[in-house]
Image 1 (tube, one colour):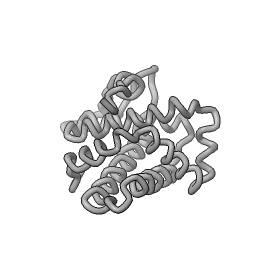
Image 2 (cartoon, helix red, strand yellow; image 1 turned 90 degrees about the horizontal axis):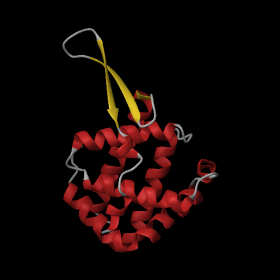
Image 3 (cartoon, helix red, strand yellow; image 1 turned 90 degrees about the vertical axis):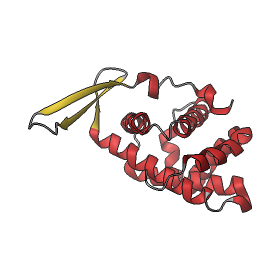
Image 4 (cartoon, helix red, strand yellow; image 1 turned 180 degrees about the vertical axis):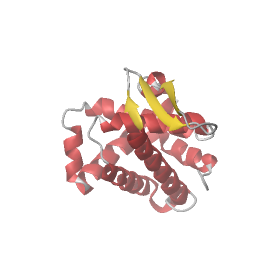
Length: 178
């Protein structure tokens, strides 16, 4: 992720930890106000649980910025999983814009570079990687996804199965705000 400075993302994220619940509630308010059609994606969702899961996902991402293999795998698997929720490509820009507005509101006058630039870069990377995952990964059995791709050394197609159940469904949301 060219230009991404994990220490800046982490520093700004840590400043928001004491206000996590308010931040996430404001995010969904911004999302639904700016993009009313997004409400349809959450009609049958327990929003309290959803908010905790979003906080947990953000914390996971922030905590794994230097572990590109794990982070990319996690984000691609999340993208694949979100296909089941009816998420389409345009929805990622809605979420990204709403997150940036929520950061801007939370930081007020302090919402400037490097925070602004770094979060724009991070959110773009997250969205691109999840979209890529939504296109390239197909569900197999519960808790596993299968990636198909050509081998660099032959013309044969290779298949790699990765267990992402622990990464995607069961990661510890408690780590978010210790």
